[in-house]
Image (cartoon, rainbow, N blue to C red; front, side, top):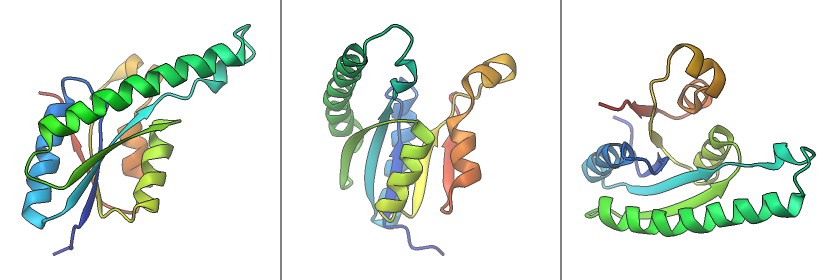
Length: 146
């Protein structure tokens, strides 16, 4: 059996995130592993040049990150009791940021939610979970909403 010592728990801080955290806590307890909960704030640099000043975009992203950091601290305190856990907010394209963090942190597993989008929603919004599952060199557990 694989020795799991560090789990990346990717969250979008929605209602579904509590269920994802429950799975991460259960697995962390079973393996005496630590959890790094991560939220990827969107990078809005693609909108520079659409008559939106870069400083406005940077300020907006800064506000998102600041709010997400506070929310993440509260979320970790409420949902990761009984395991060693910390939260982190990163900025950028979610799949790339999560995979990069898993590599730099030498994680053994990624646990994340999936929206279960189909059809046109999937075409328009893509699937971060799908990109991570296809690209990750370590096991990925995806949790669909009920």
